Image (tube, rainbow, N blue to C red):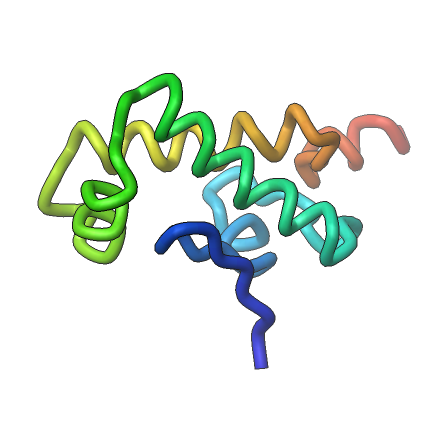
Length: 97
């Protein structure tokens, strides 16, 4: 069973990062780091993009219906992870060579 991390309706799991087109190594993140990550994603969507809690709760489950929200979510999901130190598998391979 996958462990999910939730903040005001936004739900992420390690598999979300592992299955990105340019996969990220979420297995290195502790549960605390994953909690921090979902909190950061929420804060950016709320504070920088101006989405209210109600808008996030409404838009997140059906984000494909709102291109602006969907773009913002995926962009920040990735950027917040990078800012917290999550690595791309491609970068890990490059470091070994």
